[in-house]
Image 1 (tube, rainbow, N blue to C red):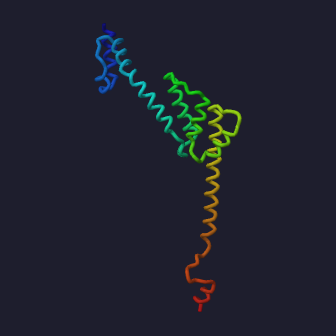
Image 2 (image 1 turned 30 degrees about the horizontal axis):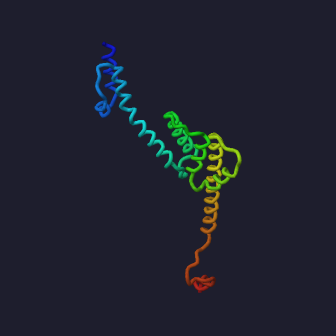
Image 3 (image 1 turned 90 degrees about the vertical axis):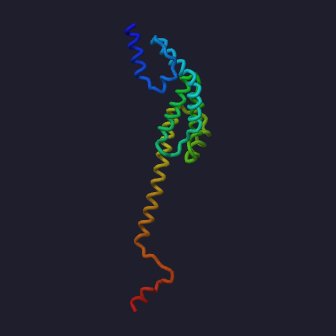
Length: 172
């Protein structure tokens, strides 16, 4: 009786007051835990729907790393699998490929033309490599623009009405 009372006290003290209001009270700790489980069992369908919705709307926008995006998508698939909703690896790879942004267009075409199918690990490796290639290309363009701007800084700007003989006119 004493351990039952202590267990109930411990359980009730560690549950937020919003949740306690929805749980049927009991004098037995085991029954009380069963009531808690029953209360949250009905919300698992809502949780399933939330994960599926998040997974469908998730897209990689170029912010953060592509590796993190793929791992988040994989984690959502594992959460669904734990709720008896199997997501095969092949489907997941295609799903992740479709969630990559337009910058990955040529990358997707390259994958679709290959005969072999990738695993999640291969997808991560190839995607990270593509992301690094894109970043290097963007950096190269920035460097070229900076070089062009640096070359133009040293040149004197010509204003309207000013010609090549304008220096002669100023000295006379």
